[in-house]
Image (cartoon, rainbow, N blue to C red; front, side, top):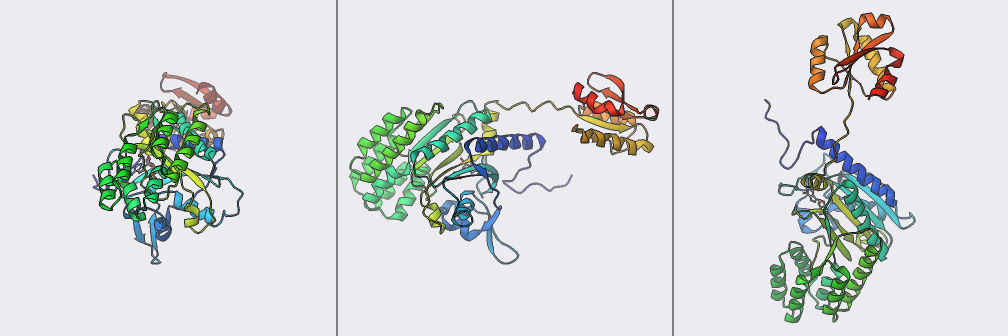
Length: 431
Ligand code: AMP
């Protein structure tokens, strides 16, 4: 056996897995359609300059980066957002707002491979550009809920926060922006003690670090009450108060929308990417310790890419992880029992006739496989049996003479002679 295998972190998806991926992808596309997001297809390879422009250090250090044959620094996309931002800052800059865009495809990150973490994985990505209103944030939460529901997940929960709560405090305390970013990244990894230690080391007053400690503890499923408690805690920080008021508006809209979303608000929740400016969220499945998707608001991103100031909110879902969630919940849809048809000639000289019959079936919309190994009929039927083929269409001399073929139901072990012009109809009725 050959020793070739996929590169570390890369996987082959065999037919059943590929079918499942395409099915989840189809659901993501359906949700996009339902919410009015138009699909765009962007390149897998983009310039390193674009991809690194606003990516955090972490994403930058994990890019599949290379020089193309023209000596350009390029990389495999580690997210969709940079490509969408490039389009909105250039070709689509004059499109009426809001702009709702959807992409789905493969993403590449040099992550350490483990369960649910691959170097090539699939995302569906939705971006709503042009609105700074809480309705837009609510929409992105709701469409994510719709996708998780339509995918068939039984139990999943949203964790919601607002980067402005922590940022508001850090800005007012005049914490250096680099340190702010490092603190947010540590908080994202739940390394709260390290984050607070870093703040203490950089001379942040105790009053502020003890407030952050309290915020980290503050979380709960009674989302509006938690928002109110956050507001009381941060009352001395104007921007944080604005942030929590905005978060409350979003939560109120979602709660009142009629779609029942299981949400928890976490005051100390941060997401590593530096470009978030507002509400942020993640979706988790209780028995899987990995996020199925995440997103939030990033109002300055488009201008960072040289476009006009365009408020935006978006989300990316990990399709591989949705599949993992479905497996964990044993909620995989049984793939439809497909009827399969094999067309086989009784002798080599009739191969052309068999090919013609197979073509006739395909033209009528019936998938048909032709026996292309020129196996003897008995052997061909044996193989068809092994592959659990439903019907064998046997093209034999005697029947052909009468303008007919034999159709054998391999599962029921019964057969009929059917006129050629009737086979498509016969198979449709019996399939
Ligand atoms: P992010 O762009 O980091 O917010 O990621 C969005 C979603 O993509 C995550 O919530 C995961 O579901 C998925 N994801 C991120 N990295 C990986 C990976 N290495 N393997 C599989 N899925 C991933």
